Length: 254
Ligand code: ATP
Image (cartoon, rainbow, N blue to C red; front, side, top):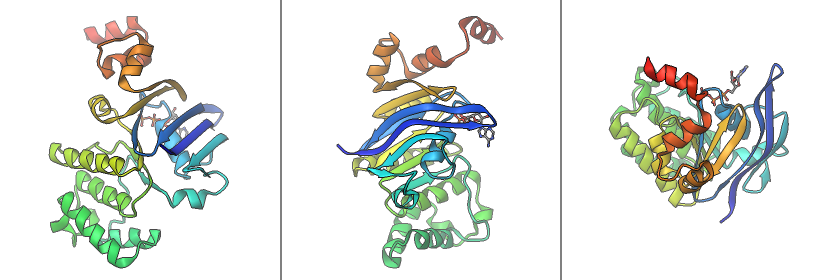
């Protein structure tokens, strides 16, 4: 299995404070990797560096063996990035937005139209294709941005909180689409605070805190490493990342 993403000793500080502190991990092609961690752990900062939106202070990023720091354009050609806040061009309709995105990625127009239609239909936005994005609910915007991210058949898909704000039906659709891309051989890395999603969907899981990777592996491997046989991912996650037990008991009692 080839390596979709290899991150080695990646680091980033903001104003002297380490947000990402020497993280290393791999995402294989045909694998869904869930990057988990409490608020402020460094997940978004890590993904933004891989996407080339933020300069790393140190470390290396390789996307299908392309050095993303040395050749960001070649790496970006293979990457789709879904930010945690859906950013759209408000005055464009959903259809115009997808045409625009297809143009950016150089997708041939006929293929782009067919794929845009397929994605909008799956994501139940087809009837809204001629509505301006500014009229969309948050969940609809999220779906439109996802359609844009999938349009050019990226080999590495990075999804920051892809299910936030989606209703149950949309969430199921998006999970199915993510799984489809994994089965087709894409590498997918996603962040989520919905641990049941990671538990059910991820092939491997990495848990980070304070910018450092605490543990990594399949759920079974995490349980073994954490000495938590039979426990849920939530139990494993909290035992590794939560505040000291005394504080937690106080919080639980409230
Ligand atoms: P969440 O789960 O809350 O989205 P996260 O794991 O994605 O969190 P990051 O957004 O990567 O965390 O933030 C990591 C650290 O970097 C935090 O301490 C945060 O305050 C800091 N940070 C993030 N962006 C900036 C910025 N633009 N300027 C200064 N500090 C920042």
